[in-house]
Length: 234
Image 1 (tube, rainbow, N blue to C red):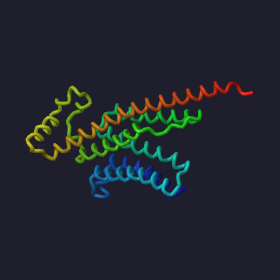
Image 2: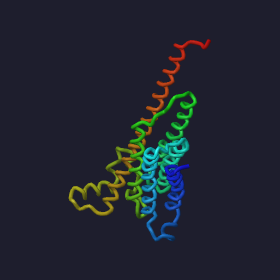
Image 3: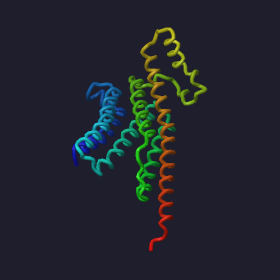
Image 4: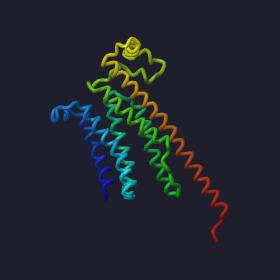
C-alpha cells in the first residue's frame, strides 16, 4: 500500500456516497445542501483523483500491481454508479447505460483472456475519449437537473427525427435567437450537452470495443504464426 493506492481506495469509497446523496434526502436534511450540487462536487473530486493518483504514482515511482488492479475497478464503479443513478432519475436512457456498462464487462473479460495468452492490451485513445465523454455527460445532466426534474418533458432526443418536436428545445433556441434566454433555457442547453456527450460515449464505447477485439485477434495471429515458424519443440 502507498499513497496513490490509498487515493484510489478513497475513490471507491466515494461511489456509495454518491449514490446515497442522489437517492436519499441525506444532503438536504443533514447538510442543508442541494443533493445534485453535492453529488457534482463528489463526482468531480473522484474524477480528479483518478488523474492525480496516476500522476503521483509515476512521479514517486510507486506504480504497483495492486494499483493497476484497483484503478480501473474504481473508474468503472464510479461511472457505472453515476450512470445508473441518472437512469433512476430519468436523466439518461437505460439502453445507453446498458451499452456502456456492458462494454466494460466485455473488455474486462477480453483482457483476462488476452493476459492468459500473453497478449498485453494497451489502453486506446478512443477509450480515453469515451471516459471524458462519460464525465461530461454525467456532470452536465446533474447540473441541468438541479431542481430534481429534467428540463425537457420527454426524451425525443433519443430519436433524431423527433428532436424539434420537444417544446422546451424549440423554446430555448427561439429565445437564443432573440437573446432572451431564461434560466430554464440554460438548463435545456446543458441537457443537450449532456445527452450529446452520452451519445459520444455510446459510439466511442462500441468503436473502442471493436478496436480492442481487432487488436487482440491481430496479436494472437502474430503469436500463432511465430509458433508455426518455430515448429514443434524437439
